[in-house]
Image (cartoon, rainbow over all chains, first blue to last red; front, side, top):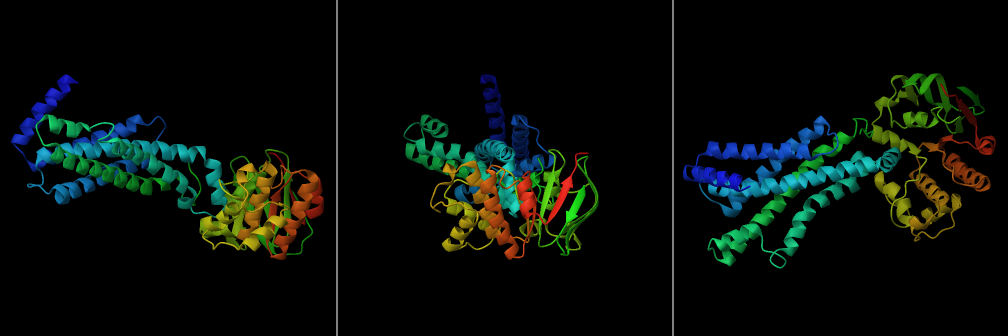
Length: 216
Length: 215
């Protein structure tokens, strides 16, 4: 860990001193690809190729849209590719989205496979697939955002967040550190929510055939 | 397969050279409209599979299934299932009251809710003297099956595909419930295809009997 962090420190110093849009975009791409591969690796059940596409699409869109909104509208720094801001914020947003998506996928898969009979019984009555899996989709979304929300509830009372602690130790005023922390946490929650919503909207259909039959 | 028909009604389903895996292999089968058809046969003969094929929960490997002269693949599957509705063997019960469990079928299929009087009427038809406010989790297996039957009545499909709808009831209650249920369906012009192991039910209620044999 010490060696990894030292290397990261030197690499970041080099990138921060010589900012370039191509380098920033390359790093964002590498972070996204690593997070997608990490999600694939963590799944203990076989994932269909279409589900992998859904994961890749949602991880490539949700965090990036959040990042653009956050950097362009909330913090509003120039130039837009300034790595000092982009890379740490992207790291937090992509990291939260990765954790959320992993939980959502696991819960969606388990919810649908272990309730196969109930879902089929609803389809037999004439329910649309989207309605038949609504409960499991909602549960998957809740499981994805719950860790971030729980984290928010304990923040400032039970513990001080890492980023804020780092800033305070570096001599920044706690009130300024708090502003950044609130913005980052809300950005993370937005990133998780958007990524998981995109993923669920794309992926629930993969569990059904074109004739609205369950296909596991 | 052998069939015995005593209804003089038009064909509702026609199955021609239908093959599904090594479970179903039917050369020709007709099911009449407006009558009660009982599917009988030993376990593993493909009775449930046949109902699932008619409900489009599975697609045939080869052959043709016509519903009122139209191949079933030509219907939108969801709209089709709202006309040809199947009740699974295990009763689908949602957490909540009996009222919720009855209304949920309408909500699932995009229909408006029914009045309390209509809900009480269907409970009376399936011989379930329970309050609508009662928690469905406290019901016995047989009572849950009757709630599922009552829910199906509210949906008023054209065809009722029933997979052993009263398997957990004693013979006397089963006959009482099904006689009233089937009378109500027929009164509304519906048709029923039902899997049953009860000889008495077949004798009393079936207009057409289809015997499936294990392959």
